[in-house]
Structure formats: C-alpha cells, structure tokens
Amino acid sequence: MAEVKIGIIGTGVMGSDHAAILAEGVANARLTAVQDLSRERAIAVGEASGARVFAGADELIADPDIDAVMVCSPDETHAALALKAIAAGKPVLVEKPLAAGIEDAEAIISAETNAGRRLVQVGFMRRFDPGFREMKHTLQSGELGHALFLHCIHRNAVAPDYLTSDLVIANSAGHEFDIARFLLDEEIASAFVTSPPPTRNAPNRQPQFILLRTASGVVIDIEVFTDAQYGYDVRAELVCEDGTVSLDPSPHTMLRAKGHDGFRTPPDWRPRFRQAYRAQLEAWTSGILTGQPTGASAWDGFMAMQVTKACLQAWRSGERVAVPQHEKPDSY
Ligand SMILES: NC(=O)c1ccc[n+]([C@@H]2O[C@H](COP(=O)([O-])OP(=O)(O)OC[C@H]3O[C@@H](n4cnc5c(N)ncnc54)[C@H](O)[C@@H]3O)[C@@H](O)[C@H]2O)c1
Image 1: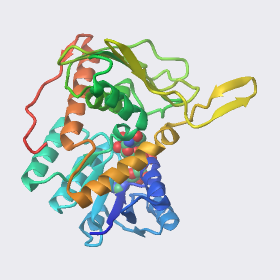
Image 2: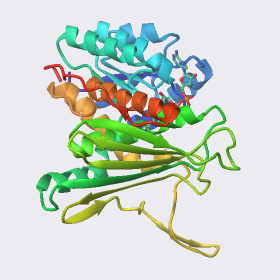
Image 3: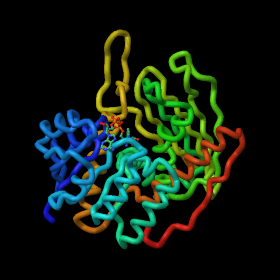
C-alpha cells in the first residue's frame, strides 16, 4: 500500500474538518469516501474534496477501495461502527470518546484483541500538540525532578443547549483525562468533583472543577467551563520539584485593536489544535503503513472512560471515588 485510502463516516463539524485537512494534503493519505446520515452534508464535503459519497456506513466500511475508516459521527454510534471496521480488518480512527458506555468499550477491546493486531486509534489529538509533547519530554528528561501538580483549564466560548452538567464531565473533560495519563505516564487512581452554581449565560449546566490523584500521588486539578464567553482557551501547567513547564498561551498572532493588545483567542478548538489534528492524521496513516501504530489506543480510550465514570459518580455523591484499575492486556 503506497497510500492509505480513507473513508470518513459523519461529516459534521469534526468530519468536515478532518476532510479539509486531508484535502489540503497529508503525506501517504487520501480521502476517497464520505458518508453521513445527512446526505446533503456528505455531498457538500464530497464535492469540496473529490471523495465518493456513500449512502450507508456499512457499504463504505466494506468497500475494497477503502483501506481505513474515520468515525466522526456522534458518541453513541462509535462502538458499532468501530466493531464493523474491526470485523472488516480495517484500521479505524474513532473520534473521542471511544464509546458511549464502558461495556461497549470492552467489546471493542476484546474484538481488537481477537483480531490479533491494533486496529483502533482514538482521536485524542492533544497527544500530537507540540506544546503538550514538549511538556511530556521535559518531564521525561528528569531536569525538573518528579511531577507534583498538573493544573488544567478547559474553557469554551459557548456550548450547545443540550450540554448538561453530566456532559461537561462525560464529553468536554475527556481530553483532560487522556492528556493527564499521557503526560504523567500513569493511571488516575481517584476522582473528586465540585461545582459552582450555573452562570447567567448557561442556566442549565454548572461549570465543573475536577480533582484527580494519580497512582503515585500527583494531584491534578481541572476547570471545565464551557460558557466562558471570551473564546476557546486550553491551559496546562505541570509543577515539578525544581520548576514548572506550561503551555505557551500564544497562538500564531497578536492582535491590537479596539483597546486590546494581546493574544487572539480562537472561537473554538479547531484553529487551536489544527496542527495536532494534522499530525494525528500523519501519525495514524504512517502507523498503518509501517504496522507500528502510535497515538491513543482502544485501551487509552477505555481508561479515559473509567475516569469519566468515576468523576460522574463523584459529582453525584459529593464523595471521592476510586477509579477501577485493570490489568492492561499484553496486546497494548
Ligand atoms: N477530537 C476533538 O477535538 C473533538 C471535538 C469535537 C467533537 N469530537 C467528537 O467528534 C464526534 C462528532 O462531533 P461533531 O462535533 O462533529 O458532531 P456533529 O453533530 O457536528 O457531526 C456529527 C455528524 O454525524 C452524522 N451522523 C449521525 N449519526 C450518524 C450515523 N449513524 N452514520 C453516519 N453519520 C451520522 C450527523 O448527521 C452529523 O453530520 C463526537 O463523537 C464528538 O465527541 C471530537
């Protein structure tokens, strides 16, 4: 295989963004097919990218001219589509979360294990963000000693009405759980959640403050505020024994206008993580060609979901909740 021919299922916000990056050109990858329940949406992306438009996901997965599949449809569709791709022996990049429920995630792990090779990657693209990678590298170099605290902030300008307080944890905070595991290279042992009242801008949900502790005792705090109004803002600072390392707040440009002098804040996550989405696609397709997958595995997706589940229990009970620990199968 000289290049990976990719089919995208779900051409909404994320699917069309991945399609646009592929259409710009990603080494060894070509977008050849798209499908969406909304045929109109699939046609629009197909016309912009030159990809064939399929009427159904099953047909796309089975097509012999498609080497690998991206699942960019809503959370509750992820597991069934990933299982079909595994059954067809095709690599699949599943947008986060891996599945909508733990049992579905377990079914994916067992299907992949039975298939005898890694076929699933989860779309935790922050693992490919240059800033987060440098933080990890700094920690691993040992120059700052061991980690003590990881402070994380995740703010959106506005969120859709359907986003409940539960979903702020179950959907928005998932990236934080994965990046904490990735940076610190260990599992999360416990979770506690507390929240201020809803804001006047979003009376139907509460911002969330999540406190995690890793197996070795590193303390992680995460603010998830989906209605911060001013823009999309992700921050992280890793505090170690001999210094700290944090994400550079700067995007690529500064803005001076209307009494303001400073960094631009993007309206949503796509510009902020554009480079990471591209690097994720490059790593995924090169892993398919070399047989050496990188990126978040189905196991990583499953463990992030365990943290999510513990946080939801912690939020409802007001108690600190232990995150169940599992033995990682040899295949991961
Ligand atoms: N990695 C990230 O940074 C990131 C960011 C946002 C969303 N996401 C994830 O990406 C996924 C998609 O989110 P989105 O914001 O693009 O949603 P969206 O609603 O904009 O798009 C989803 C699309 O899937 C289509 N669809 C629904 N059911 C389908 C099915 N059974 N088969 C084919 N198409 C179907 C819808 O018609 C819609 O066009 C979600 O799982 C979400 O959690 C990831």
